[in-house]
Length: 252
View 1: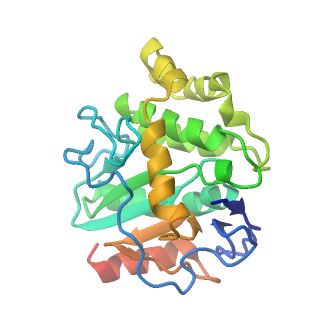
View 2 (view 1 turned 90 degrees about the horizontal axis):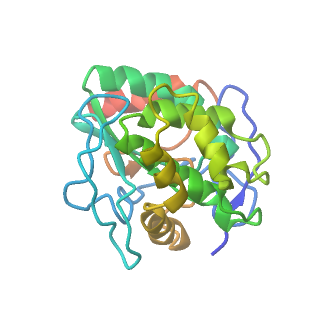
């Protein structure tokens, strides 16, 4: 199964996304129905949880589900009753565009204990015509940062450092991911660097791709689900306002 980055056109809203169909088309979720609410590892017992802290603290390592061994790459933040599930790829420009608009809303809802957010970083672009290994490497590094209680700051730094062109596989170089970590106070350490280089979360990340994208349960990234139902991404208007309205309708 191959994925491909589609064209992103933002005029105050998301118009297209990174699809797994190998074609340029509408963003996943634009007028879509229910989607899978969890990745292949999110149901693992005792997945790391950070309470309501937006930075995240790890509560230990798990075994990722599926046939590929590895630590569970699922990141869960917050304790609210409304569950938001996000699938994203740090090489994918549409993921950055959606993140930039939704993250202030997410931060506010986390601070108010209104939502729980489950993050799945995936390697869709690596499986596309662009090839490479940067999506997988960056996703693994984000879970390494979660272990160090620096997930959100490092996630922000990854998106800020994202090459504008998806074909530039800069994140495949461990030195690049470590240099990004050096911009997050208190993150870079021998433990973090070893985690970046050995990629203990790689099996879990690959399993999520296989379970959710190669199987066509989800059509592309970014995919955002609210209480297990894929959120239809608006084709016009204010994305943040639409997201807030959707969360309010769900009880957050």
